[in-house]
Image 1 (cartoon, rainbow, N blue to C red):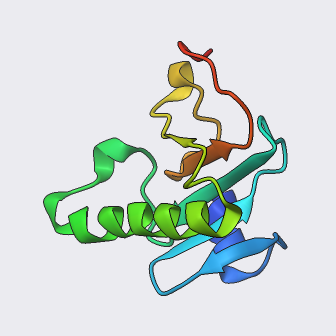
Image 2: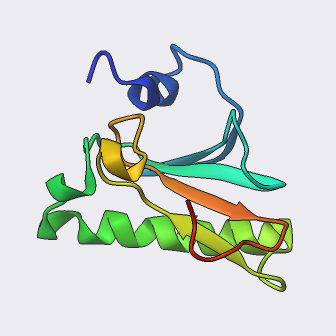
Length: 114
């Protein structure tokens, strides 16, 4: 989508610090971190919300968790723990309407959130 922030980051027209990039997924540091480790894992295919994901997209969505595992190990959080959050809709806190998974760690995370 031409006006989507994450689509523009993916195509390179908006700069961002990518910490991971492959054919289907990329990850960037969050510009407003809520934990010592906070990055976003983003599919390159545009979905406004998780409600647009179809059964044919399941492999791509699964690859997001594979990337999270790799980045958890790289950051040492596989030993201490981390949280993955996906917001769906404005009332859930979604502010960019291109699905993205928040990966948070590096401190004790409380429950319930927000």
